[in-house]
Image 1 (cartoon, rainbow, N blue to C red):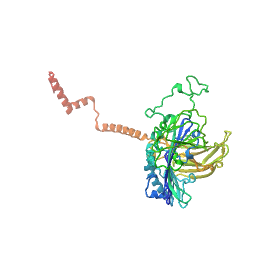
Image 2 (cartoon, rainbow, N blue to C red):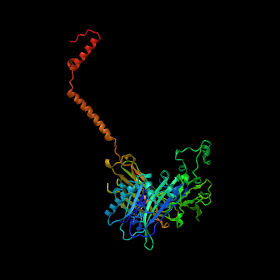
Image 3 (tube, one colour):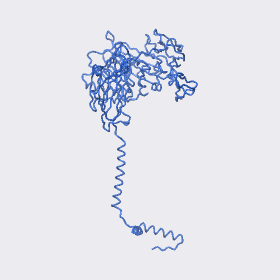
Image 4 (cartoon, helix red, strand yellow):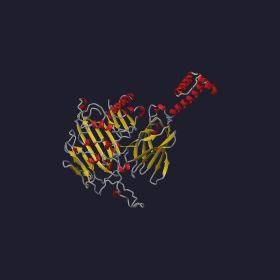
Length: 579
């Protein structure tokens, strides 16, 4: 069986591949890249890569390979790390190439894979059923080297509502050869990682073959996070933010309303002082002893700041500056703590950030509980060349799009929107309609956005009414719609560029689940009143007051009361005659 999959826990990705005839040598590499970003942010990109031969894997020699396996602010931070190839959508995203003779066999193996990964990563991947599974046609390409004879079936599933927590980080660390005890993985702290402004965890497994036909199994684990420097330096014992004293505020004096009691703070600058111990709460503990030290891969920590900026490190570390003028790497010594510190200093040279190839935005428009609309905006920042890309959308079955209502609007440099035929922008379309409670809607579009233009696509959809047993406990919150996946067909880059939109929240017609309780209470009250009235009429007899007193005196209760009254009067010395 050949299985190739990617699991994303927002941002996590797993690429799982099993195949035969692999014999290359084993090795292990790890690398940490640090890059300050605008608005007082810091990008920390961890990468771990292990290679093991098929012979070692079959003989269960698990020296390197384990026994089991926010939203990116493109306008401020530039392109995504790894061109978005190791980034998943919000929640959980999984896609796999499965070797099977038919679709039914491939889906059966897909269910086995999701259930296995669910237990491995402590995630709810077992909820990825047929309604959350699609079969993309052109949105993804197999990575690694595969035999032409393999009958690969691509399956894709998402859980946009899955929340990533520290329980997913622990299995991730157990996949590493050093288990987070040595190397750059010692910096991992769940409180720091999941408190980041943006974070993504990924695990990729693929076959890599050389020209002579020798192959290895490669597992590559990646953690990317964007940390707020001020927030990360805050003490854990006193995490409550404190207001900045007035004498320390940096105000924009160019504002017309600037005064002694009025201040407009300037944007955060990227020249603040920080260190690894302050950002991650601990220093780096040496290097992993299993890491390969025969090549440049032993430079496990790299920093992207101008060479003119002062950087202080541990004495045992060896600094190596690259020729690009902004990258420097450090060669660490085993079993020795490493810390890196950058003091606050004026910055004269900024780190160049590349312009993203494409800007994308997707929102739900309209009002009411019956119908709505989808609006997708694509912006091409280039003034020279158009952008060709594939737009992939996986919609739940209870969101029924009307493809015939698809409309396109283009806005050029003049800022005037013009409605154009959708065929001028959309080159190819693949549409697979949904089947209620069996599968969702799959939509893939091949589009081209002209240079310096913004294209807006809109279409209408209808909201289905669910059975009352199909609503979750928090039904009034809404239902999650998976992010869209964009694959940019840019020949200038060797690897594809992926962009994912944010997930959406869809409001469906929701019944008032408190009404059954109200009906039960009202019905019980009416029945009690009716039953009590009828019971009194049937059992009790209506008499006058005098008759009631006479009947009361002749009853056993009346006689007992009379005896007690006579006995009381006798003790009080009164002459009472009892008849």
